[in-house]
Each structure stands twice: as structure tokens, then as C-alpha cells.
Amino acid sequence: MLSSEDRTRSCATELVCRDCGRRLPLIDTTSKCLGCGNGLDIDYDYELARERLSEIPPAEREINIWRFEELLPIVDAKAQARVGRYSGRTPLIHADRLGAELGLKKLYLKDDSTSRPSLSYKDRVVSMAVARLLELGKDEIGCVSTGNVGTAVSSLASKAGVTAYVFYPSNMERGKARACRALGAAVCQLDGNYDEANRACRELALASGIQFANITLRPFYAEGAKTVAYEVVEQLEWEAPDHIVIPAAGGTLSSRVHKGLIELETVGLAETSGVRIDVAQAEGCSPIATAISDGSGRIEPQTPHTAAHSIAIGAPGDGPLVVDAVTSRGGSAATATDREIFEAIDLLGATEGILTEPAGGTTIACTARLANEGKLGPDDTVVAIVSGNGYKTLDEHPDKPWAEGVACDVDAMGEMLEEFRQHGVGATLG
Image (cartoon, rainbow, N blue to C red):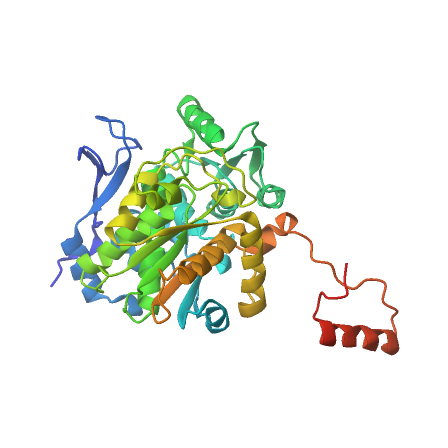
């Protein structure tokens, strides 16, 4: 039986350097190890987490990102109440029609294109960052973004009463930038690619004192990605899948899904050691996939050349963690050309009625490639992550023509209908 103190204290215990092992108190505001300068992770009292999860099982809890609060780093209940209550818990869809096209009988889609409030998986990580900001008593937050981080920061900051500053690289997706402005954020387009923008924002964070969601708050931000793993396994009735195919940009999602799977086993909720993580990247920006496929394990920075802007990060900060996650689990990596990505977007829409952005198209295109190469078996349970919504990126999608100038009478419309029926919906168009 838990004591009253054990029921209320946080299971998150310390910040720990993932390289040298140095430990810092959780209240410390640094995002880098003071000894070696490398990234920090968050450690937990897993025995306490196990006891509390057994006392109040997940099924008896509110359905949102805080469902597994014992495995998340936010201590302040008031911060939890203000951020993320409607984030997470996106549907897991049995994609039977798409699976038939790809030769995968048990293909599932984790559809984060429906996430609240900003229609991408980034709601999960940004919820952690904004909640941490509230714990620190701050009222300004910045971010550097290829797209979806910006809209998530703008949405969640607005609800929390926090001022948001969004910095985009030169190839920003304008629809997402417009959304940020509509949500009340200040938007600044920088003259440089994402990696150059990221370096400049690190300097600005130090000079201005403003907390940046995916820079100074990164140890907390990253923990939100684990909730994808928790939800997938719970939605499969605590039977872990054989594969999870994940689009990779900076590598946060892939590396933290790996951590989340380990944690589920540690606290006794599921057996997850057999899950393989497979990484999907655009051919025009694939430093992680290349490091895995060539067997070197070394992340060599690349200059992005792809229409999949939201995953176009040439120097991924968590790249080495992803390589370790994939190789230690016996997974693999694949890439897709821009043409294949947009064809996959159309295929997903035509079979499952889901409109995704190029990042999600990359996942589907790479899932098809891995299946074709025999790396995904026809009877394997495969979960593909659809990370963002395509309605935000329609300006990026190649136009598909439709019938125009058809007379508004039944005869002309009937003739057009016959054309569609006989030759397909696009056969006579353009």
C-alpha cells in the first residue's frame, strides 16, 4: 500500500547525462551536461511508477497525454491542468485497404494527424515543454521549427497564456506560418536552412533568456514523444507490435519511442523487447537512414533537398540515439524520393481516407519499400506513424486537375460522369 507521500511525489527524479552519466537535480534549468556538454535525459523511480500504475490502472484514467503521468517529467498539477489535456490518445486504425495494397495483413496507422490542438505529433512534445515553462514561472517561449513545432507551440502557448516566438528557416511551409500568426504567435523567417536556424536560436536563447521549447527545454520536450509508444501498445490490448515505422527528422520520436517501450516493460505493463523500430526518411535528407543502411552508424550532416520540409533536418541532434534504437532492436531504415512520397500521400488518401503531409507520406512510402524488400512480413503486426495533417501542406502537394467548365445541366454532367466511370477519375482531365 502506497503512503500518502508516495501518491503525490513525482516519479521523475533527476536529469542525467546520456554520455558521461553525470546527474543533476530535476529543478536545474540547464539543457546540457555541465561536465561534458552533451544532452540530458530524465530518470525516474520506476518501482514507484510501477506501484502507482498498478494502484490506478491506465484504463481508469482520463484519456489524454497525462494518462501515464508517472512516466512523464512534469510535477506541477496546475501545469498539467493548463496544458495537454486534449492532446494525445489519437486513433490506431487497422488499415485493411492500404495493407492489401502493400501485402501487410495487420497494418495499423497511428494517426497523429488528428492530434489536438495543432494536428500533429508535436502536440505531445510541446505539451511537455509548455508545462515545464509554467513550472518555471515563465511567460515567453520560443521555438525553431520546420513546420509542426511552430503550430504546436503557437496553439498550446495561446491556451496557457504564454507569448510565443516562432523561428522558421528560409524554406518554411507558408500555410503553417500563417497558422502561427492566426494563433497569436510572432513569426520570424530566417535566411538559412533549419540547421543554421537552430544554431542561431541556441545563441538567441542564451542572449535573451527566453526558453526555447526544443532547445533549452529539450529534456522535458522530448519525453512527450514516449506517449506514442504507450498508446500504441495499450490500443493493441497490451500486445506490442512487431514493427513501428517512424518518420525521422531530429530523431526525437524514434529515440523516445524506444525509451517508452523499455519503460512499459520495466513497470510491468507489456512485453516489448521484440518490437523493431524502422526509420523512414526522405531521400533528399537521410543522414539517419544512411548511417543505419551503410552499417557505419555515423551521422554525417547533409544539406536538405526535399519537399518533405517538416523532416528536413540535415544534422539531427538525436541521430546517434536513433541509430542505437534501430540497431539494438534489429530494425532497419528506408528512404523515399519526393515523387514516391506524394504518390504515397495519394495512396493513403485513396485507401484509408486520411490526408497526410509529406512526413506521413514518407512513412507510407518507406513502409511500402520495407514490405517489398521483405523486411516487413505479410503476417507481422506493423504500426506506421502518420505524424501530421495534410490540410496544412496542400500548397506543397502537386496539383491534380479536376473537371472544369462543365455545363450546369444534367446531360453535360451525365456525360462527365460516364467519362469518370469508364476511364477513371482523372483520365480525361488536365
